[in-house]
Structure formats: structure tokens, C-alpha cells
Length: 102
Image (cartoon, helix red, strand yellow):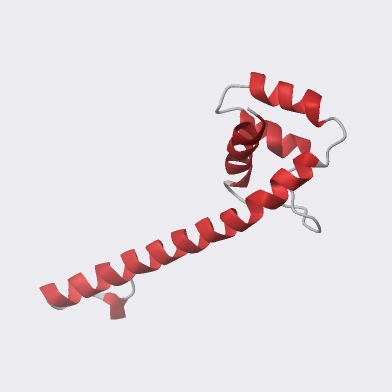
């Protein structure tokens, strides 16, 4: 906190803490919304994979905590036109693929 963010009273401190929590919650909600919109694209890329049958079998053999790495390595979680991954997308995508095909 900068010098202008000092707590001058209990009410002021509550306000500052509430503002930080509200900002964090808003960011989390925005990130979740972005992921919800990107998961169908990731699943669509899986569905277009010519080796999806074999890859699904491999994905299903992985432990639940390794599946996101597999989805990342497969390229399904990389959005068209992007070189970087969106944090959390591969995990949600893997779960959706397992639910879809499982």
C-alpha cells in the first residue's frame, strides 16, 4: 500500500480491504468467463484432430493431474492465432473432453 492507502479509521480500513477483495473477485469472475468461452474452442480443436481416437485413449490413461499437460502438448489448448496458453484452459478442456467422450 502506498502512503495514500493508509488506514485512518476502522471504517476506512474496511473500505480499503473490501475494495481489494471486490477487485480480486471481479478479476476471478472475468478469468472464469474467458475460460468458459475458450473451452469449446479447445474441445473443437480436439474433435478436429485426425488422431483423436488414439489421443483420447492416451488422455484417458493419464492421471487427472497429468491430463492438462497432455492437452497442452497436443496443441488443443493453444488458441488460433496465439502462441501462448491461457492459464487453466487445458485443465478445463481435459475435463470437458473426458466428459464428452467418456
